[in-house]
Image 1 (tube, chains in turn brown, cyan):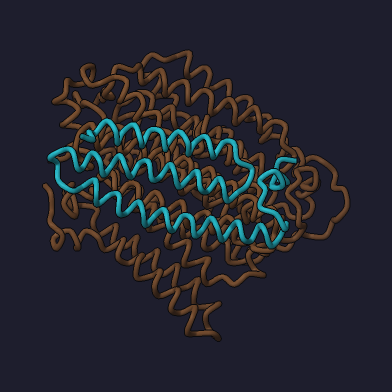
Image 2 (tube, one colour; image 1 turned 45 degrees about the vertical axis):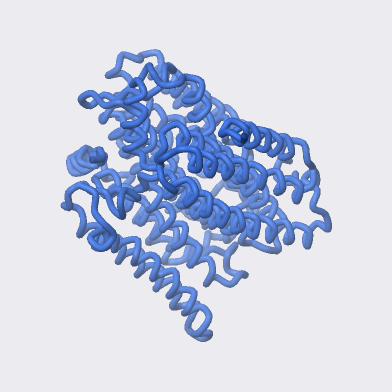
Length: 497
Length: 101
């Protein structure tokens, strides 16, 4: 069902709310000089919660195509909207007491955060190449500015310079690929593109060389957003240089939006569906290519993380490795695989944001990211040390923490397909990863402190936020059924028509 | 008579030059010029496909948006380069390697 513009508006409330929120925050920032520092975060949170409320309202709406095929509304889109809004709420809360951001005026920061959120929400829903490119650039441009937010800091500036150069080249190459798709099929709409490709001879029959070129070029854009090898070079430097709350945000939300658009682009635009199994158009052995990307991504991320002494850099490499695990779910090209991607992203949100929140808290009091300086943290703040331990164990994937469920589902989906050796490589990688996560645990819990023994100052807000992030990590596994059902329902991709 | 192939060759050449420029230049502003070439090569593709096929104006519409996005991208990039100049008194990318150490 393709809706026209006026009928589409009532399904577009979450995005409209975000847009109004951006304008309100900017307006409030200019006009209310006395109140703005208190009002801006509240306004931002209110906007995000209201957008989430409107998204909930649409939960039972039938799948449809909005604005003449520009956006889709379906279970998949609903999942990512809620996921991205939740991530933004958590990051707003985590950035409130950040000592890194405090010296700088924060009105623009919240406006930018809302703008990125709007871009990501649109990105996860777009079914038109122009819409896809525009929302990708909205996410990218605003995140370049957020990375360089510490104007007087050399590292932050360098990080944003690297980010924008890598980003502009990747999205530029992707745009060239998109223009070739337009030439090949004469349309920008994903469903029309799929039908045109199928009518040109189906999975095997289209011009192989052009398809290969198109897919390599577009993968540059998606690979950049998800930080997959070989488009990951920006990732460690940008994550290390950016303000920590921004790093936390980048490592979760745009990565998730990147996977969302990857799945939508390949599965509803470039695939032939038969039952729940997809076959990507073009005579290339796609599962093998995706397996290669996935294995390289996780191995490189894990091996490089082993030698890092800066915790922020280590977490950057670990987030590359996690992109590799998530990619495992895409390899099998089934609904079950997509479901495992959703589950992995959902549990990854809580454990990774939690780990970065601890990094933020410790940097605020000690001004250090070095793992060696974390020694003896247990004596200084048992709560923070134990919280970090749980986040690390969850990132390793040790039961009963929720990270285990993510690994269980992605490994399960490849084992279902009989790819035992692939699952074995994944398990081997998880074992390597355990080594560097354990190093943080050892520093915080076992090592003697070297220097300061003063208790760690943790604001009430940060304590509450840590508890809020710990609860899903510990208890999700007990209440697993609703999540299983929710993600299974979210695999519904709008099929066009 | 200029055919579609001529435009495609032109855009492929521009794309290659853009990638070449991006990979070889040390000056941040020159790298940005390379990026502009990449974006404009895609624009030529879009407009040529739109002109030589009977599929309506989608491609030209897309190209207009790309021009706007390219302008926004350069504005952000130049602001970042300007901040870099303020901090380091240079726009050479060789100097921007503190994070690697």
